[in-house]
Length: 364
Image (cartoon, rainbow, N blue to C red; front, side, top):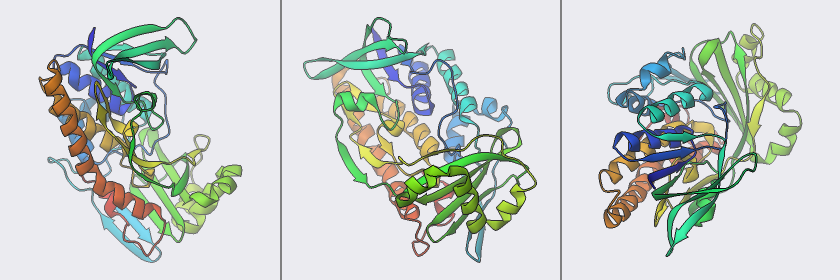
């Protein structure tokens, strides 16, 4: 029997598994993927998230991937330009944007080094219940091999926006807003190493430098344009950049596109109930919002630390664990609700709504 089973080995799951394993708990972490690969992401980690990586002693390995520090933010709205800096956190003044195949691999290694058992290529088919309490999971391989059951005192759902753990636990929605934007992005060479955002009526463009001299170039569109944009994603992105950030479009002429276009029209905005008897949700499984303010990774790191702090040494006592999970739920909502609201204001793509660079400065 395990103390904790973590479902999902991305940022939220691997960080949670690492912290709970370091606390001395017996942790099993499972993930559907066989190998760590890139996933849809804006990559950006705010200084408060970078500070968490520093406290956990994994930042040196992240920096060794070669992602550049992002120490300035430039935001343009028409003729108005604001130059700003990320909001410092615990002495950290720079943001970073490592590729997810690199960041997630660092965190998985840290979890395994801490003593967590990792099973890739493993999906959770169902939760195990006893007397209304989650007591484990039923797993199988992606290839459809025989199912196995594993038991634990706590099951952590870190399996993303479409969380199977949340669905099986029937976690109710606490807050929900309609989709506001769809986003498409690609990677380009030879662009300046600076985080930049640009907005116009119904338009938003961002450039986020990452590893290997590449820059993520993203274009946000009103959700109502999703079907149109999806039909010709590359030209829609380039047209949006040309209209909203003509200087970037000119710079792109000197470089080249490094990958195909990635994107989504399913940017949900919600808070789910974070916990119940024997289960808890972290990361996008419990809370998701439009990626326009690039808060997802930082939020996930925050929630992993918050959960570990709330649980402390009380996981083996059912009453203490129940109280800890309730504290986690309350503190998570209190901490993340302001950024949720400001993100939704920005995602309306209405230049009359205050926004600009402020949401990208980073607050938790």
